[in-house]
Image (cartoon, rainbow, N blue to C red):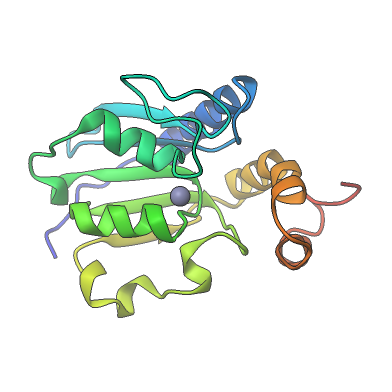
Length: 179
Ligand SMILES: [Zn+2]
């Protein structure tokens, strides 16, 4: 696995949390994502678009319109994907984690666990033969983890089945309290 440059995870996670709020304000789920190159330059920004219409330029209005897919569909062909880092406000689901591995993204970093929809519930990335090129950095900052949990908790309450919500309450008791 190639050596990836050190990046300021907190800086980019704060930005994806802002993108998540933009998605929420636009009527979609509060999840944001962006792609950063080896020099720390942001190549593309995206957010969940499930609640917004499909347009010629952007995926939308479908359950595949996750923040990470918004990023991948915008950016198209990737030069040297192994040098890139994907930041997401929430642990990627199986689709987005699978897409990251398929594209050969070098590193994936997320702010907050998703104990129901996150890929980690079904998959240990490092054990999967197709995901060996993707280095995973879950939850590097505890304060941003809590911020992301508070932001997504109402959506988890609304969208997930009772057993999914129970997992959220068990993982994030304070952030889900009263919802
Ligand atoms: Zn996803």
